[in-house]
Amino acid sequence: MKTSVRVFLLILLGLFVGFVNGFLGAGGGMLLVPCIIPLLKWEPKKAHATAILIILPICIVSGIIYAVKGAFNFDIFWPCLVGTMIGGVAGTFILKKLKNDIITAIFSLVMITAGVIMIVKVVA
Image 1 (cartoon, rainbow, N blue to C red):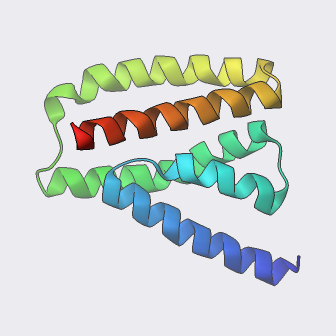
Image 2 (cartoon, helix red, strand yellow):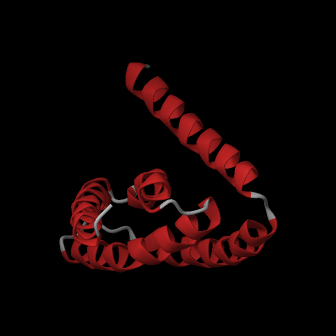
């Protein structure tokens, strides 16, 4: 694939992922990973790590916008931040140790489980 075509596709993917992340408040990284693995022919470890770094700026910007508009719950921010930081560090160490097929299986199960839970809540 030509570099210019790849860059264009990555920009389109970024627009889509940024929109979804901003609109839903999360989920951009979950969409980014399965898209960049085949597009860039990367291993899952590299895709997951890169997705985290790509999503970071939009999460910060979206969070600021939500806070300014009053749609941010400051009561849960600090406790969740502490837990997220500890969990994130632990996750990076585990990611480095697991094989790519195990990472893909876990990621797939998490996405399927989240989807089923959301569907059940809508139907119920």
